[in-house]
Image (cartoon, rainbow, N blue to C red; front, side, top):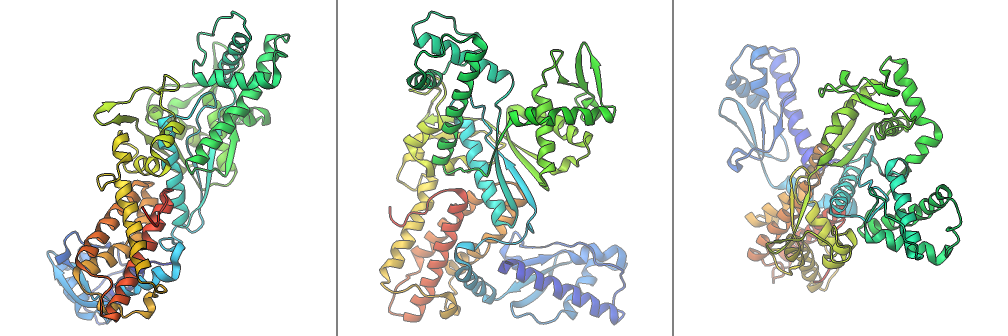
Length: 558
């Protein structure tokens, strides 16, 4: 599916190149190759709908001033059904001024594609894996996990809409030191709940949820684990505890509208020998050495921190870094062309190490992209919310959903660039007013649905309406915003920035409100009413589709 904007740009580009070919045949200009020029929307409306910089880029090879080249191109340019006039500006920009026919064609595409409107084949089926949240299964999901969930899921939806083959994955850290501490914590709470006075481990997990997990285990196992030795008891508690925690994570994220294609267990890397394989691979490349009983990776060869990293500790236990290298190798072995990780900003130092490790084992590090995500500050009005009422620690994802709902949470988490701190105002997220950005956008959709119901008739198709009647500035502005939607998705996919779509949703809602305030949809002029109703319906489709990508509902009434 090619958007009307791309169709027009392709058509204009072909015109430019045909004009140059004609001029070359006539001996008016000499060149070997046409450079990679830009054809884009100018910042100023007075400069036309599209502008090309081709004349400036050809000046050196053609040995001619850009302005002269532009004169030659414009003089030889052919006819185009969408072009009203072509002008030369400044040092040689070629500005195209279009009639409204291309916008009317764009409205017909919205109708035809409906739920698929906005989608394209830009990604050409390229396989992308997006790994996000991947919280340790030793506690409850918190604000950072929530932001990662909203960003990762919206990004995945956007990439899929842009034509990529997307796999969403959650990496479960069910091995290593944190699981040892998890087992010790469960054991202490288990024995304490059964009346034994045992100390709680210094590195244990103090959350109330650990006690809740143990109480659930006791309901099933009673005191049957008391007689077992510590290792066996902890192994059983970890198995049962992990199962409950992972199920809780799955349910919590599902309530948030986030569902994964793959849940990958770290233990699988240990059990399959994948970690051993990657260490051996690095050894073959002479990138591993032994020191003080541990095995070290010469990572300083591949990044700028001038520091080598331990792969296997002196006790023979692989480090988290070794497992992470094996995991990312596994991703590429599974055939992903591109791997995207969403990590907390506190992992920024790990990015260069992982990219270096990918280079070391033979992969292009550019195939690994890490999106770093800053902290969330939760506010209630002007007061910072530091602790959860239930856990006495951090506010959990489930508590947030209970208070403000999934829609507001997801929209707020995707409103800002992930690399900026997010100040999340709980009171604002609950307001039923235009101050609340998600309410503002959802209300626009509900208002549209109300208008369409008032017609009392079957919704008209754009292709059956006289769209040339739509020529008011507010109408043209709204159509232009609608036809930009597929372009916005592609741009967001290129930059891996889902906040592009929250900004677009707000702008579309605002443009619609401006249209509605100055253009009466239903009137005695039947033909005009039909055309405006078709425009309103196209707005509904577009707004619904962008909200769907963001994982936010599009209510029909509010």
